[in-house]
Amino acid sequence: MRGAEFLGVLLVGLLSACTASLTSGGPDGASGDRGATVVDAGDGSISPGGDVTSNNPDTNTGTIDTTTDSAASPDIKVDPNDPFARARQLCVDLSNEKRALVSSGPLTRWVEKEPCVDGEAKVESDANAAGEPAHSSRGTCGELAQNLCGGMGWGIEELTRYCVEGWFNEGPGEGWEHAHYYQLINPAFTKVACGFYLSSTGDLQIVQTLY
Image 1: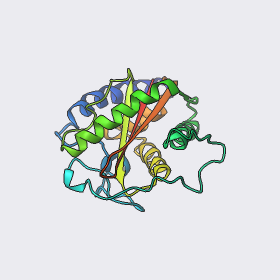
Image 2: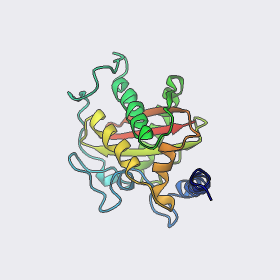
Image 3: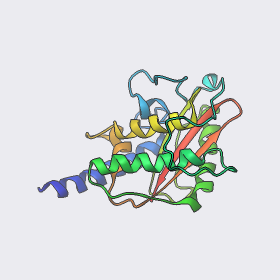
Image 4: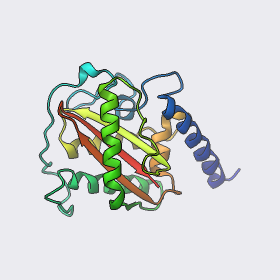
């Protein structure tokens, strides 16, 4: 089987497995990929920064720095009415940087979808606080794939960088645990929207939807 054909078969298999596992929170009934398995599949810690968001409501304490990072791209335009404006574009730019490494074409930012995806992020934050499985919002905005990540005590752009890096660093490999990587680089996807929600307890949720 040629390389391109193998990649196509692998992507179909992984995306099918991901759809099943993310709906149930993982093959063994685990809490899904919110936080720990996105960034660190080991002990659930991220460094530097605060606690990784988990499905344990006891971790939902503290605050998060909502100021922008000094190292952010100067080309990112800021909407004064949107505290997440820079992070949204950063999410797209970093995703395209990772896709370029594997020769996948760039994603177009779907701005019109972002309010809907913000709503998905709120649903995930509420589910996290209630100790419910991740990905309960999947499909709300018509996406073909969804990546989640969350944390506490982080700057918005800082967490965005760690999340995209974490998704990419899951692959390559075989099995559902590499699904974020294959969703991020899938050449069949052409559009992306990144949503954010910051709860009153400081839980920042990031949702990336792919189309």
